[in-house]
Structures are given as structure tokens and as C-alpha cells.
Length: 505
Length: 77
Image 1 (cartoon, helix red, strand yellow):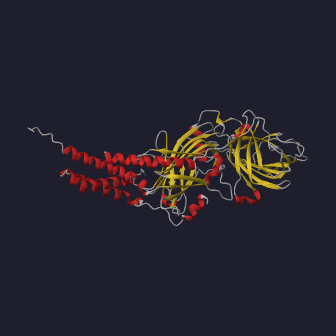
Image 2 (cartoon, rainbow over the protein chains, first blue to last red; image 1 turned 90 degrees about the vertical axis):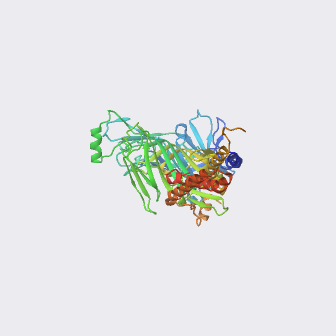
Image 3 (cartoon, one colour; image 1 turned 30 degrees about the vertical axis):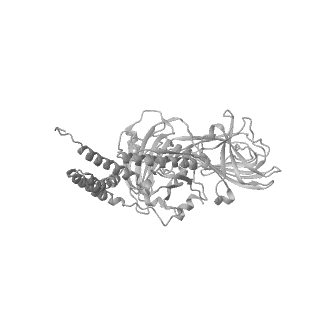
């Protein structure tokens, strides 16, 4: 056993000593700036013109705010504060701010500001890359999703009834700064909007309706104090499920020996739609299915997979769920996994399940040019079902399980000219750990990324990871087994040489 | 240099495993069979010389054979 023990001890030292460097490189926690409780953003900016577009076509509200900001101070300024009511602050997902006119230059750094929790308003601070000179202007494109912002009214309905959602907001955007003119456009999923607030904030009809788009404003709000609220509520038909994943755990396991990338996702799904006022009727459900009439229940989930995905599975707490259909794609065409939950998921109902599949590693892993032992991995950060009604994720935990002995782990999400649906790097918590599973001696290096409040807008986001992994690290598994069998041979030889015969010595 | 540029720069060198997925079972099975045969031969003559001449090749075949066999059955280590 001695050679085996020596080898293992040596390997332990090798990995443990290097893992400290790994964590130093890759660890970053979500950053929050601490400010005093009575903090108020300095009035150094003015919103010259603000247009807020709210998209209600999915099961969450997606807002895009385009605002022309002017520096009214005598000094150049670089910190622009975004204010949100306290009750929505924690539900802001995928917040991104760009210069609208230079979107290709990438997003600005955004940090959450931590102030007294009892306050009505909380802030994010946007750090402009270049301070804005006095009297000059910049157009900011601010986009984010508001999770759990749509509420079913009535809260309980019959199984085959239409479902209606309400969305409440303020006609005046809750800005920290004076706003000269502003308007809000709402895009509904259809034209059936039975209730909406009308205002007398401007002359003429407010809101103005055009098909499924309602426009509140424009309002001249130069004399309105920042933070003034004018509540508006709209109620519209949404006979689709409000698909919410309270938790998604996504594991991506890299195997150099097997040349495989294994993906497994565990969902804790919930429908935030109207609850059933009566018991579930199997007959009504069968009839509704036969007629393909719209329903507030989750009937089926459609999951496009990368080309070349194989060995899919769909299991829940009971076991394999046979109501799934897999259509494998060709080398260049994406595959499709359509799966029906074990039961329809009506409002207030839960369903947890796991799905998984394999891919050839060669499409996701390359040897970096910089070094013989360096690798670069590019994987989707989030995949998830592709549904017309959208999916909102309250918490997503992505674990990338790298081979045993991988070190110098660095990661980055890929940014493009358009929003990738993810929040900034400061809002993604990361940690490095080891994960022990089959044939491991020390455990595999695992990068865990945690993001709260995500939506399916982040479906196409990509994650790039680089790491070092030497030949010696790769040989750890076969060497361990070789040493094991060799020690059995040595023990057999040693035991065979013990003379246990009964004779006179 | 962003990591995405590192990825783009490495486009000419995708990772290819030593044994392709389709050949893992044949490779692993052959090695394990070899390990079994060599272990049997070692059992006939358990000398110190046999450890060096037969035990080490048998152990190596077993070490690599188990890795490929467990991959072949779907547990990608």
C-alpha cells in the first residue's frame, strides 16, 4: 500500500497548494455599496426625456427605459442612481445599462446600494465609464425584468376559465432625479384589456390605445418632485401559465477521459397563475386537451437542445416520466426535447423534476494557444425551456464541474452588442469547491455561480472558463487504480511467502 | 484579452479525447480482459519477478481499462 499512499499524498499536496490560487483568482462575491440610512442621491443630473417600454407578453414584466440624462452640476459626474421601490428592488432581474448610442461598447458597471431596509426606495448606482461633463448629455438604455410582478385577478378561477393578470406601476417613473418629459408604453399579449386606470395628467385621452399597445403620457413633469408616485393598474387576459422556477440547479460536468459534457438540470417549478376554485376535473381537462383550448396550466414544456445532444432523460421524485418525446437534431440543427409533466400544473401547484443529456466535448472545449496544459471551455450559462409565455427563475445555481486537478480557473460571461439577459459580473456570486464522485481521489474542481432573479431572456447567454490541467492531473484516476491492483499483487506475493507449514524449525 | 478572445484564438485546436466515445467499450473491455488474463498468469507463479514482469502490465491494463469501461457505460469520469 505504501506506493499508493505516497502517490495520493503527493497528489493531495499538489492540488491543495494550487487550489488556494484558484479561489483567489476566481472568487468574487456580489458587491453592495454601503451608504448611510438618510442617503439621498445628489441632484447632479436631470432626465431630459424618458421613455419606458413595458412588455407584458410573458409571465413577467420586462422594462426598457431609454432616458436622455444631462449633467446639471458644475463638476463632471459619473455616478447615476437608479431608484426602485423597496418591494420590487429584490425582484429586479438581469439589469443592464448601456449607452444607447454606443451599445456595442458594452454595458456599464452597476452596483446595488445597501441602505436602510425600512426605506421606501432603494438604489442601484450606474458607474459611467467616462464622467459626464457639465451641461452635456448621454442617452442611457436601461433594461431589466421584474419577477413576480404580475398578480392573477381573480385569484381563483374555474378550470376552463380565462385567466387575467394585473400589473401595477407608477405613471411617473420612480427616478431619483428631476424628469422633464416622460411617457410609458405598455405592450399587452392581446387586445383583451378589461380594466385599466385612466388619468387626467395630460389633456386628451390618457392612455392612448393602439391595438395591444397602451401609451401613458407624454407628461410634462418638470415641476413634479422626484419620487412622486401616481399609481396605475392594468388588468389583461393571460390564459397561459405563469411559469416560475423557484430554484434551478444546473450542473455541467466536463470529462476529459470520456470526451463528454454531461448536463443535468433540476427544476423546482411553480405556476404563479390563478388557483382553481374547485377540485381538478380529469374530464374537463381531457376535453380541453382534445380541443387544444388555451389553459392557465402548464401542459407541456419545449426544450431545444444543442445540436448533437444525446442520451436525454426526464425523471421526477417517483422515477422516469415516460411522457416525453425527443427529436434528435442533425450535426448543425438543434435537437428538441418536448416533455409533459406527470400532471398539469395549475396555479399554485408545484412540480420538481430533473432532465439531463450528453454532448461531445469537442464542441465546447479547446486547447488554449497560450499553454499546452491550458484549456478553454465555452458553455451555455442558461438553457431552459423555450416557451411563448416565458419562464422566470427566482434563483439559478450553475455548477461547472471541471476535471480533477483543474486549477487557475477563470470565468467570464460573453457580452455582445445586445443584452444577454444576465446581470453584471458584480451581481453573480461565485465560489470554488471540490465535488467528489465516481473514481475521484481528491474531488473535482467545481465552479459554482449563483444568480438571483433571472428570466428566459438569458437563454442564449454563454459562459467561458479557462483552466489548467496537466497530463499528471489527467493520469490521477488510472494511476490510482493501477496502484490499487499492484498493491494487491504485492500483498499476494508477500502473503504467499509467509511460511505457515507445521514443521520443526 | 477577454476569455472569449482566448476561445476564438483556440478555434484550430478543439479538444479530442485519446479514445473516441464509440471505441471506449471495445478499448476498456480489451484492457480489462488483458488484466484478467495477466492476473491469472500471475496467480500461477507468485514470485517477485512476476510482479515486475506481469503484475505491472496487468495493473496498468486494469487502471486504464476501468477508466474507459466506466466511461463506456455512461459514467463519464
